[in-house]
Length: 92
Image (cartoon, rainbow, N blue to C red; front, side, top):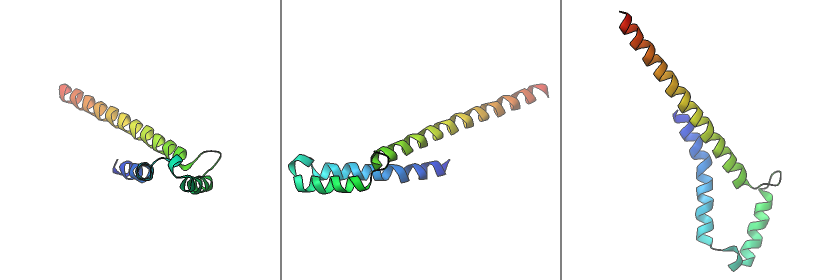
């Protein structure tokens, strides 16, 4: 289970850093030269018409989905083992 947390942090950290950078640099309309440079750099990071934030968000979403599935499966297995153990104790 710890591996999912590590993998999640690897994908979430760049998104959080990007949001912090966007907040620190301010609005792109205020700095047209910076906006042009940012758009040029953004074009380099595009894949299939989407930027890296889209793909990072997609990966984080998939990670959350798989982590949720693992939690549900582990929860169900735990309670099945518990039920089986209680039934065995009743039969003794």
